[in-house]
Length: 156
Length: 123
Image (cartoon, rainbow over all chains, first blue to last red; front, side, top):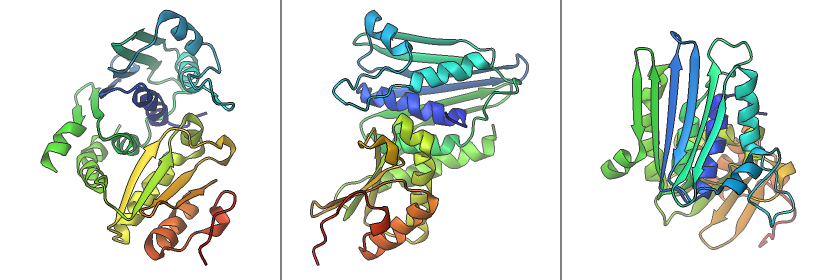
């Protein structure tokens, strides 16, 4: 199990990279006013059809069918965390268009893991694939932070 | 969430992106699968990036991949040399990450106790 939500984010976004996404958008909404935390990872990767989506959401499934040690617990982990913290978990996917994973939580829930080291998560994602654009959109009641790896690539 | 912390991200990512350019002597690949992340692969990677910067080692590229193969040996780190030789390290903790940087990447000496299976030594 993961101790930090940012580890969940890294894990889910690594799926996006496996799906050959050119863009991964991570949004985090943290609202004390509404006592809500919403995480979303959206990509423009290869997506999944309805049958595959159903299997993905069952525990312990992976697209790595040829591997003996395929585990496939990433989405199940996030669903468990989200539901444990009075939240909802949703995966939407269109074949050829992309996938969007959304998990919400009650911000003040005692079992809600901390966001943790988000910087390390984004850095790891930026190191994964030169072709993939990694975006982070963080919002709280009064604050906002936007990151886009494409901006850095241009400067460098 | 601390916004101040996030503001350092741009600077750090800029450095990391410049590290990604090809033609380096070593390429370090960290396995960032579900099991890898759960075992601490992300922290291992951060540690390696910090150490590489601290010891100002220039000719290293650090990147991540999915599963490397042995789930029970996560976190796993693969060091690929420009000549084609590959060394896979398993059960790498923070101390191990530091060792790989200061011995393998800095001095070209493999960290035998962390290597998975047999590595071919040219000696």
